[in-house]
Length: 586
View 1 (cartoon, rainbow, N blue to C red):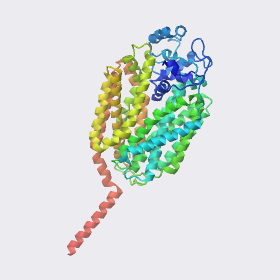
View 2: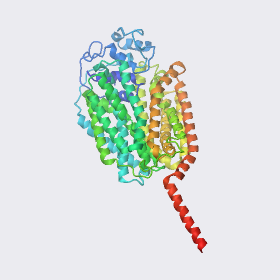
View 3: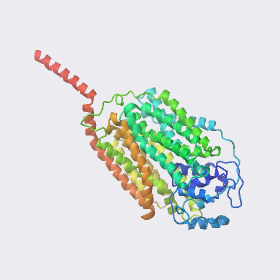
View 4: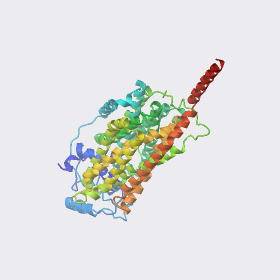
């Protein structure tokens, strides 16, 4: 079965199927969409195919749309291999006068562009997909997943009330929607570029607005949650997501899209508040498991979002906005009825204000934020270099290296998502029962370093896939412990502020990292990014071990100076004085 028989060719849908695989080094949801297109073979409505194999109605032969699609990826100067491949398979396409390097803002990349856009399909028939049905199926699927997650992690639910369990479910749904809402829109980027006549710079502006709004609002939401309460901030954020999706559905120009993307990024900055809420209603032994479940919910959203986007893509961009708005509205209703006010002793409402001798954010907390910034480098390297590394290392002898490597890369990303869910739901809770934090940190560091070094020197693509699995296991064993340690260092009065700051550091790493690692890949060596990530991961782990070793004294000092502890000490002192007086009287 050929690629042509699997991928549909529609007026509004073709840009997604052709241009998004070319951008597989851009974002994880994009490559998952390519994977779904190849494996599922979703069918679309037919269109007239011209002599050059392009849909005449969709005008996909327009060089401008090709320019937009390929500029989302890393720029590469050498396109001779793609042109030669195209000359054999589609001579009339290869003879076209494509823009020269002087006529383009950036050179054509080897991955993407011609070799992928020329993979064209014939007409297919499509059944109408009801948006309401998709909505119901998503709600049911997420409910079953969360039920299974709760049943599998039996140790995590011990000692929790029904209210707390409902709160956990709502928190998982919130972070799921943050990832799902970004992933479902990724396949529509080329369609939007055509509809609104946007350049690559405009598209980059949309994505940059989303990332910077999220990075800026994450610490602010965390700070507000420490002051006015977690529940109020989460309800505000979820209501804002509904507004953002409604704004996107009503957008009729680039500026409307810019407003919608900015609002979506701003109100999706809830990961810090959700982790702070979990810290309020869990003890130190249970907290890492619940944080791991949050990471699993994010991975689930990253996997499901592009799939849903591909399924309903023939319904148009507005359909995706409506699905997200309906899910967010349902999430807001769940939060209103199920998300209670934290009533544990470590909730911010009962925590005392920071003492004069201790800063609100201790220095150890800032060190952990720096460690999180360095540790986020692995994801940055994947976004910028993995697709090119796979093609240049394992598929350069194939007849169509770009297409073959894109399919393998999409499959590896799907494998990555499944690995994250397996580790966070099954492996991590069991390892928490066997190991303490220190040996578990050693294990996670070892897995990660072995995986990164294995990727750098992997002789075959299957060895690469195995090394990638080791890296994912190490990342997801260490991340919950890092978050849990930050809550211990920060103290109850600064949970939201510190966790929001950590999320902001990670967001900035995702903005800055791809440029650095792309330069290493192009100018130094293909293995350089992975070795650099291994070095940064070692530094991040060293920071974690240092903070862990020095945090016991800080935690003990805070516990001794807390009002509850002072009250107990006063009570014990009074009892001792009474005993002394009684002995003197005797």
